[in-house]
Length: 196
Image (cartoon, rainbow, N blue to C red; front, top):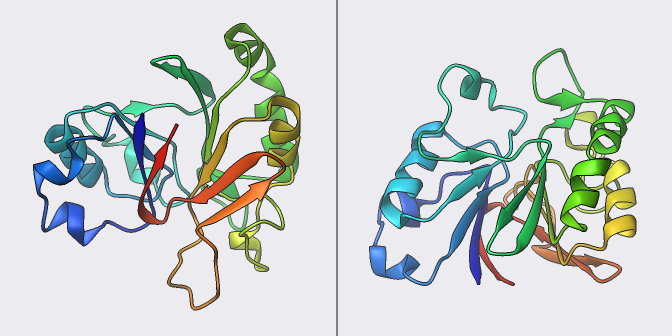
């Protein structure tokens, strides 16, 4: 199964120069946040596969106008052809606003998901907006990652941990792929394809 993961910046290749044949083998699209609702709706229409999403710290407009034809997976375990996908959007709280959490608030969200995860028998993909603390994150409060994600990874051992928030054009050497134990960490900035 091929999954197109996207985050943070609309891809010109998709938005301006879309060719249906380039995405013929894509089975699922996952957005890690901070993308325009119209962009996600465009992808859902043009690629014609399920488009899942979590909220980024700039997605407050989704409250008024959510992406049409897309599925929000915030705080749930979504099943797709036997693949269990857990969604936890938002960033570290750096100012008053929606889709921002303290470490304690993120821990609480994760604890409330225990029974959902248990009923599904674990997770295969962890989808977040923010990265894990110390892994692909920044030093400023806005781009700080959550330590709570390590506990999810160490307890459930998902095959993939896919996040956004860290733009690869920030001028730092931000890796696209990494590992936490056996879990492959993917920065979904703009667009990337994973296979599971």
